[in-house]
Image (cartoon, rainbow, N blue to C red):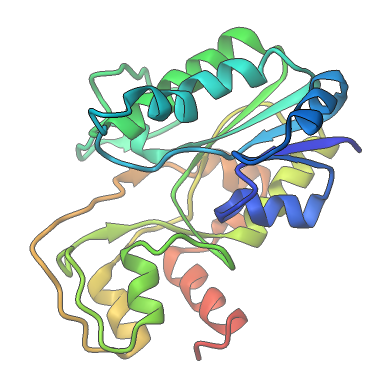
Length: 256
């Protein structure tokens, strides 16, 4: 299959690109390679690239919107059979409701400009592609995970973090994401999916599993109540809990 993956320099994009091969698109991709991409008809485009900054730099706002919105607009104009877009559960409002894929969303709901631009790109994908798969991802753990609070707790022996112990995460695993992407291409799975585990975990419980004395701060993050019925019934690997996935990651990466 001919696959194009974006965001191949880090995170899930890098992992996907290494495992599926095909062509990759990054900031430093040459003009020659970009022309080659424009002329190729892909079986699937997997759009993982994004700018994760939660605030906007007033000196360069255009680059942020290019990364998170305009690049999506460019990619949907290419030739392909299937478009897979990596979004986030942060598109949902921060409330106590259980969030499912058929929930009506608007740009006033997301709690950050990052999430709002993700929701904007979702709208572009829905409007301009015939065969799409939108993956609203919780926190993915894997070889190239970004150094967020969770990874700091895992990798640093004596760790001080800004979030409180009551902060709530939903954890999934790179390998499960990749296998679902493969499955979706082979079986033409379409639509929107919450890419989430069956239950959340607090940072207090993460510290307990790690057997570490973490110095917590006062900040608070809540992944929210994410309904993963659709993904777990389609691909049973996602029936695992966040605790299951954390323990699996630790074993695979020799932290236990």
